[in-house]
Length: 193
Image (tube, helix red, strand yellow):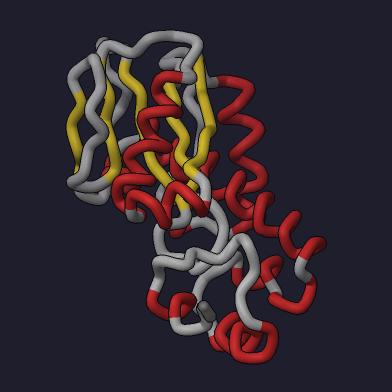
């Protein structure tokens, strides 16, 4: 991964584009070059335990970070890509320090008032984007575990809203909840007039 350079930049990533339920969560992180954090990587390449260990270190040692979301209603209204970009914009705007530039995981970038670039597989190539991916994933998982308390029949603590066999079976048996994304085809087929 690239080391942090002289420009003060924010790494940005999101978690939760694929699930059938729950919000999409984005994080923006400005790392402190004087406090490198060992083990940062794409959140998908880390275990839940590794992410849970790294997230507090990121929050402690980053110069600034922000974690935001776009709701299920926003996802259904403007589509998941636009909702992801909205959550990313909110995260950057939520930073206590204004970055000189923003680097986003993937090809799609939010419109911001500072330079922004998309980096394919950025969460594997850039430490700040990796840090953002970890914070976003840990927060989204926490939200879905909370939803599990509210909707225990759906197994959200296990699958986090992704379209697993367990989740699809729950939809068949119990129908949809208010946290399901009604614009997603596997959910929309359970809608009744």
